[in-house]
Length: 277
Image 1 (cartoon, helix red, strand yellow):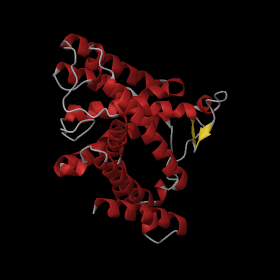
Image 2 (spheres, rainbow, N blue to C red):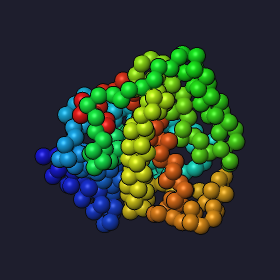
Image 3 (cartoon, rainbow, N blue to C red):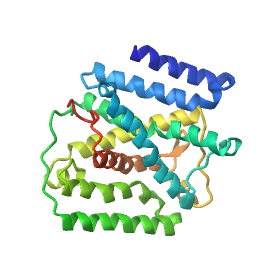
């Protein structure tokens, strides 16, 4: 049932945006993305991984957690102005809130299924958490304060520091996870375990390519040149665009996936992410 539903959602979403079907064309992006999440999740299951739907309550929590997670970046974007939604002002406040929430709920699941897909292809699914170093509360606190400081700097100097917004949640939450004895990317790297870091990074690039391709077909946001014009004028080949995004821009998806992972672990949402547990 999952595979036919996934394909149906993708087909309806792409058809709606192509022929501008009434009502459905408003939610073409969401229909396509929910279909893609279900499709990638099913491929992961076929390849031997566990489906997110095997834990429906945790999957529901993941959808809900995704909304405030992305709202943080929307809040930061008030200062950074890295993207704009051309259609936003055609909605009322209530309708836009619903529309945006349904969209934002896809962010964390998209990262999860993309990294799980990479894990099944590379054979890096695991049945237990890799060994990780113990991190003291003092060290964890220092890194968390560093993350908060970087956030303040980014918000005050957005024209030059805006790329660092993608790493601040990771810097703030991952050391807290380590100090609490939860799964932490930093604590694993200190111990010499790079598996989680690498698979998340590769999965982030996959997710980024899918995100940008969908937005190219169903444009819902644009990248203005007002503040960070230098970024879009980087020399070739790093300024060469894949869809609307310069090649260098895809690097931002990597720390973004680390932040997503740290956020989910901080909330203790038990979804099958990089594991068959």
